[in-house]
Image (cartoon, rainbow over all chains, first blue to last red; front, side, top):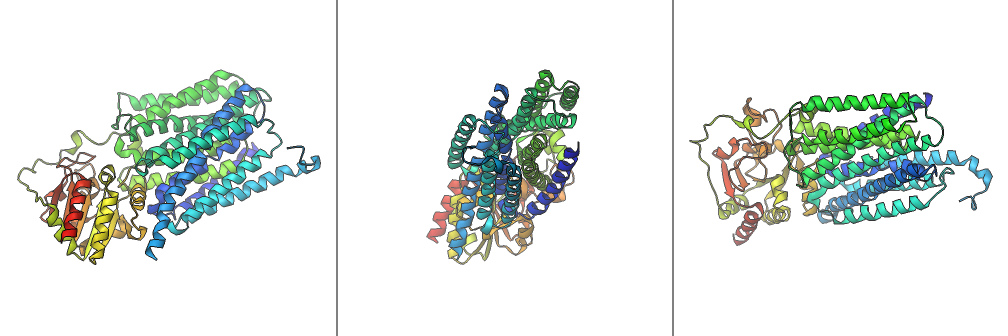
Amino acid sequence: MESLIFNLFIFVLACFVGFEVISKVPTTLHTPLMSGANAISGITLVGALAIAGSGSGTAATIIGFLAIVFATINVVGGFMVTDRMLEMFKKKREDEA
Amino acid sequence: MEIFIPDSWYSFLPYFVELAYLVAIVLFILGLKRLSSPATARSGNKLASLGMLLGVVVTLLDREIISFEYILAGVVIGSLIGAAVAKKVEMTSMPELVALFNGFGGAASALVALGAWFRMASGSVLPGTDLFIMGLSVLIGAVTFTGSLIAFGKLNGMLKGNAVVFPLQNAFNQLLLLAAVFGIGWLLAQPMELAPVLLITGISLLLGILFVIRIGGADMPVVISLLNSLSGIAASFAGFVIDNNLLIVSGALVGAAGLILTNIMCKSMNRSLMSVLFARFGGSGAAASGGDNGDKSIREVQQTDVAVMTAYAKRVIVVPGYGLAVAQAQHVIREVADLLQKKGVDVRYGIHPVAGRMPGHMNVLLAEANVPYSQLYDMEEINQEFFRTDVVLVIGANDVVNPQAKNNPSSPIYGMPILNVEDAKQVVVFKRSMNPGYAGIENDLFYNENTYMYFGDAKNTLEDLVRSIKEL
């Protein structure tokens, strides 16, 4: 129970940090923001690693393995495609100069 | 692992891992902060991916992880698929891709929560609070998963785009939600039983499908944003289950991002989130806004007229809509803009928040066509500019420039913020035919005295325009 309350504190405060930071992102970058944020939500990979590697039965291992595949697609694909998009935005700086 | 590290060091390992997680969180926040400008955004994304790498590597040091075969296999497979998709995807398909990735994130989080239960089932019973959060985590993750798959199908045309509605749908969905809550209660009562876990999972998967299938194609930007938020919250809740701060914080950040975007999208369409999710919209009967169009006439123009209009103008604003992207005409419009700029015309782009199929989509498409981002203006910025503008080129956009939103209280889009293109001296509308737009609403703009219609496929008409401007 104590850890739940503590975690809840962290969750709520992090939400506020998120609102503050992300409300400053301009409309132009909302698609990369979304795909980048999406990649970050793949952080659940960290949890998947702990489940798949814990050696606690076949079911947990298989579930953990599937979670790793899904989360890794999310992470790797998300960051790469965001980079691809942002690269297109950056090129313009040199053109203008 | 144990071969390399002396046993005594292991007592410090948990602290080291936690501190590394803290560093990863800081990297995520700094990365998101850098997204506030196109100039720093790319480095921000790199910082965030660095944070991710740190989080993953440090987790692998954990002593509880004893078998690496599955981890290695999973990471390799996932990386290969992710990289292949990210490299190949067309920028026009970005909404589908983000929807799909949202779904995978949700699935992974639901699986982590499920895995935590199976791990528990082979060990000691988790406390009730953990079981409760576990149930919620499975619920949100699974809804995100199937909901995103439906959104993906609707966006890429595999499923029909319009809302699928059947009688008592809302009541049925609420009943399902209630059943899921019952499942969580059951799990609390009998933590070691598999049945409640399966019940929660099954109902949640079904709920995700039913929840998105009733939402029409025009509302997809709202839905993707919301699913984005849910994928974050699912990750955060999975973090509650396995007591991991890194997951809780990162998930919350993403959840907040998605909510902000959901809110922006709703405002841009003048709809409440509730009406998007639970009410019907678009198409059929709602569009009957007076049959007095019979005596109105339109003025049709050809490429040479448009070429003269624009080439001798001082200021031109381009208003692109999704029709531009469908016709793959982003590159040609940039060519038109380049030619005009060489003639000394000031060219800007006015972009409505829902111009694409997801927030900011049109900006990405224009960026891909090498349009400098300094020429892209959002709705608030550009709306004060129209009255000093000579020519506005409306290409593949309809509802977002419909004056009915301002002056016809009986119109279904009344109150939606629009681009005030009619303030400009002349407006040229590039359009395939006189068919009404996505929302099926007649557009008064087309009958204005200063509006000219240029019919044809966006790409062909723009190519003709390029030739005509060159000939001047």
